[in-house]
Length: 152
Image (cartoon, rainbow, N blue to C red; front, side, top):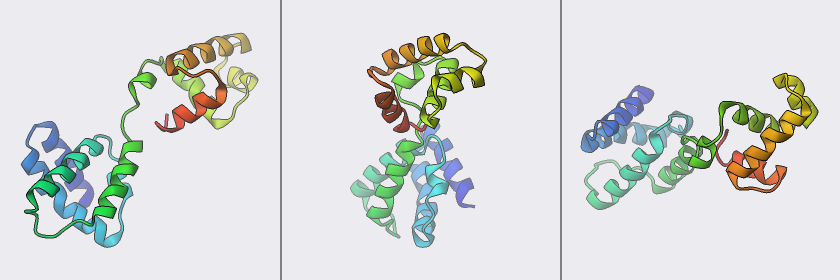
């Protein structure tokens, strides 16, 4: 039921029916806080903006009967931010560049990437150069750190 409520709330938010979205989300948050559920919220794409707006709404209205603990809401915001769609830098990458980046994050060497993607090592180096450029980083480790922020 909680998952259905979360999905419904996201849909209402997309339809610009924020009050209905908050009213649908609130009981799920109360139950989630009570039982310590987090993944249900954090795994849903599109939940972060809803939680952020809910937080503002909740502060300004103070009209919701049962309060959602602020530390629980903050934790959900942090978790859901990680699940957000990729930053616009990552969206600049082609699907093949994202494949290379995923392998880079996994610790694969250029040779291993080439073997897995059926490319030459030279082509992998070209892809890595493009990835670094698009992510505005200068090294393998910087690219990995940037990408880990987005869970590519």
